[in-house]
Amino acid sequence: MKTLLNPWFSAGCLTWVIVLAARKTGHPLPFINGYIDDAFAIPVIANISLWFMRVIVIKNNYYVLSPRQVIFIVIYVSIVFEVLLPNISKAYTADWIDVLLYAIGGIFFYRVMNRGVSEIRDLLIRD
Image (cartoon, rainbow, N blue to C red; front, side, top):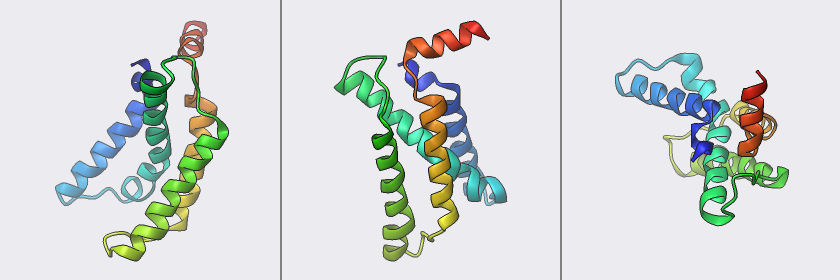
């Protein structure tokens, strides 16, 4: 459960809620609506995947995603949202800057968020 309490995960989810609320009220936030939510996409998705692996599959709070798994998530999201969906629906547009932001988000997730529960606790105690 502590995986879902990661402050970066919370920040990403809060960003998405703000973006959706702004869109629904007809007041989209230009920079946040266009790019910040894409930068948080992979950290949020990968963190949910990490939680699923820790709680349901592996059942170990020290488990971390491998680089291969994070790269797979980045490639999969890039293909679905920047190649497939724009070809199927006019509601989606292909933006290769989003792919770059997905990659940056993947690197951020792997280097900052992808830690065992004890490592996070040790980092918080030292600071």
